[in-house]
Image (cartoon, rainbow over all chains, first blue to last red; front, side):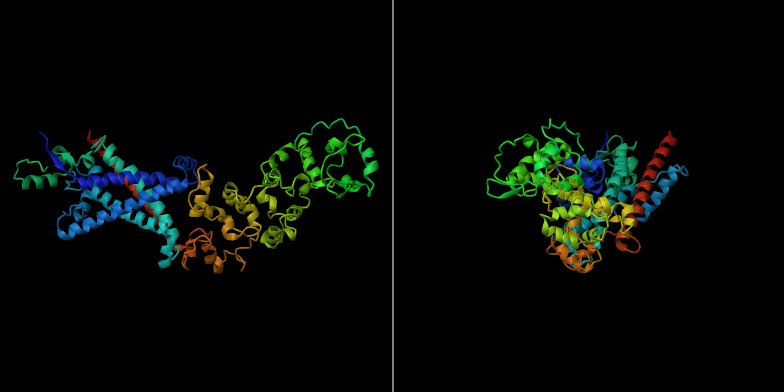
Length: 231
Length: 334
């Protein structure tokens, strides 16, 4: 019999789904603006009903994304202050050692794989990368949405800088998702074809054993070796 | 030039016509009571590009003797009616005029709107661009206000000084298919119009002007919007975006460093405020004045540009490498 372990709460699954949907809208409406002088961008803009319509959706999705980010951060700060959240996503020295260990493993210098707790260093890297990248695109997006207001308090040169940063940060986020996230969630032989945990919320004991052995051991100790599922 | 149509069987030759029409006093009174001279200046005709065209080739309906009775109220009525005669040889250009604002005015019944001969002349017809400055003078016959503004502009002053590189009216507005400047399609073409000279490096090098003006405009928010709108047949719902002429002026365009120029630093805020009425002192700083960010201009933007030029390949390359190493180890494990 296989036990299921809860990995993501209902709220976290909702957050992931929203980010995914908004990310697609933002990429589809954003890249034809960035690559305006390419034929494909102009064709795509035509499908979207023109640059003005595309911008409306881009801004609506961007504002929603910003609200989601603020809600996430406010909730975290609140929960950390009350001590009701585990700090399992905070990077530690162990993550650095795990990364080195994994590289050594890849190069065949050792056969011992790093043993991870609730979140491994790659997951932490992606989470914090997303959080900081989001802060950059939302911040620069606001500058671009309110250039007059920005220039009332800050130097005008910030606006073209924000314009460039917004567009380049969006490109980088897109490439990270295409290359790294799609690999880790779909194409990697470890999870192929689809790591469903972020959608269903749970993973199997077998995967826990393989991918999060330290967490599994902790949970099993806490449950008194009873193999009681946590959900 | 379109192929010449077969001239009608001329019942009379030019000499026959001129035997009467070389008389300076030959005239008639039209139905509106005006005296209309019927004199044809022979030397003007001989010097014209149509020197070898027979009178009857254009005046087809009066090519017989005695002339049939005509029912025109005035000389202008005759001119308007004869306009279609040009089509018989100049079919392509005549067809172009059908799309023009001038022809639309004629169709609306505006009798002062120009037809072929109003710009080209009739018996004294010449190549329209000899010299080039003549073109602007031709338009000035009706468009006095803008023509005066043009003669004071950097382009107009150069033209008066004998410079043939600068644009005359028809370079921007076109000659036969002249479009209304308020037409969206025409407006959206502005950057391309100015760019046809200002992005020409050989031409701009002569005057020490940068050809970055077009590329820097196009990559900016205003330029991107303009070119994306131009390439779709979708309705424009957003605010109008600035094009070259909105900041630099249209007919009265000056050098960018002229104290009168709307884009010189002292005037720039006022220029921005035409569209952004709430703009404050810092706002014009958002526009990099057609400069590419570099170590010397817009250093902050340049730093952001360099930062991403470094971090994007580093990040994607690093992650891609990890993926390859992971796959390599999995293969090795088998």
